[in-house]
Image 1: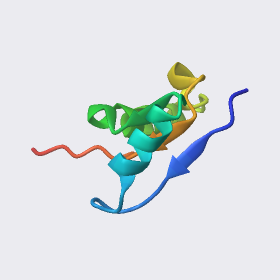
Image 2 (image 1 turned 135 degrees about the vertical axis):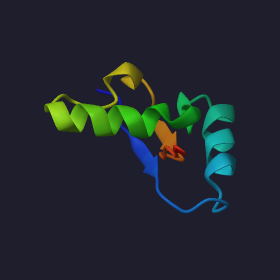
Image 3 (image 1 turned 135 degrees about the horizontal axis):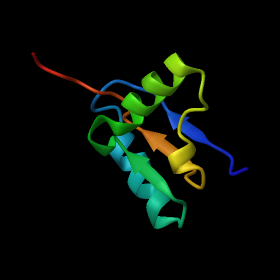
Amino acid sequence: MTPKVFQIGLNTTGTRSIFKLFKRSGYKSVHWSKGLLAEDIAAKSKTGEVPLTDWDDTVLFTDIESVHTT
């Protein structure tokens, strides 16, 4: 299994910079992904499935949030 790194922080705390650093260093990384990361974690947690299996070979996850307006 690929080791995972989760950068947890508020907006404008360097999440994109850390993402770019990992990408340039050759590590598969995901930044926000239009809320899909957060939605995957929430949905699979509710059903008891393992979250983030679609990103199994990804090392870094940043900006794990989903915002919906109604």
